[in-house]
Amino acid sequence: MTELKTAPLLIIDFARLLRHDTSEVNRLVEACQNHGFFYLDLQGVDTESQTILADWQSLLQTAEKYFSQADEIKTRDDRNSGTYGYKRIGNLTGADGDQVDALENIKISREEIIKTDSNLPVVVKENLDLFQRFVSVSHVIVTTVLENLSNALSLQPGARFEDLHREQEPSKTLLGLLRYPKQDADAKGLGLHKHTDTGSLTLLFSEQWGLQVLLAGGWHYVEPRPGHAIVNVGDMLRFLSGQRFHSCVHRVQPVTRRQMEHRYSIIFFLRTEDNAVFKDHEGNVLTAQEWHARKMTAYAQTQAEQAVNTALTGGVERNGVLLAARSVATT
Image 1 (tube, one colour):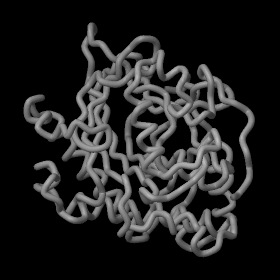
Image 2 (cartoon, rainbow, N blue to C red):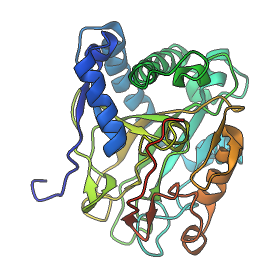
Image 3 (tube, rainbow, N blue to C red):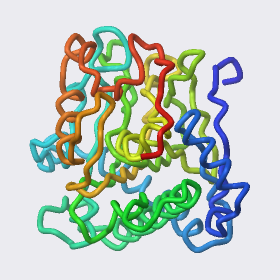
């Protein structure tokens, strides 16, 4: 792995964020402004860190069991939605050329998990305590990040980032279990297309290589780090910050082109309340629900259509090259 070009991401200590440590908050702001990606060190003694690291391993085992099922069983969880339910391999674009994607996943609404909704997949119902605990602690972690960012920008009540991410309000926040299956020599599909994330913050747990971020020098792999989550800024937080924070373009591409082993990830997508309002990269005033719909359309398009749809990467890149101009306004 030493020959791979890796991203020079900052490591942010979650325990220090809990204490609102000024120097650590400054580094957090730097990470969000520059790359929009950072490592979150969860090796502290706080309850949240200890809980999420243990449950990460339990969810990985759950994901392995779920994805090992026959396709006809997994497709029972297909809700014909780009937002929730089971997604089969090959219905999105891949990481390069004319390839389709090589990803299968199941995405579950945080709201449905907390409320024990009747729509929950069997795998969630059978492991309900685990799923409820994981989304609850994940929300505490990302809310802590938002609170520190709000403090750093001296945002007032009502305009603070966390004020638009209240747990009791409807949103598209979700938990995802992802697998990129091992491929044989003639398998089709390559990773997942370049994109920026729809929401505010993404909390990713992965022990395997494959994630790439687009930086000024091109594509860089994100090295997996034990005891660390990978956090990235999404479009909604970028827009709420007046584009001060950077929503980074990323994709998944195996280091060997062909996926040589099953690759698993656990991911928590924090999204603003559906009725939150902001200006997008083109100056359009939209609700979060409207922006989500635009992104879902872009994700499902062909590569030719995606090439002319700026929503896919939030207008921050063109033809695989970052665009230099970014506003730093705070409102």
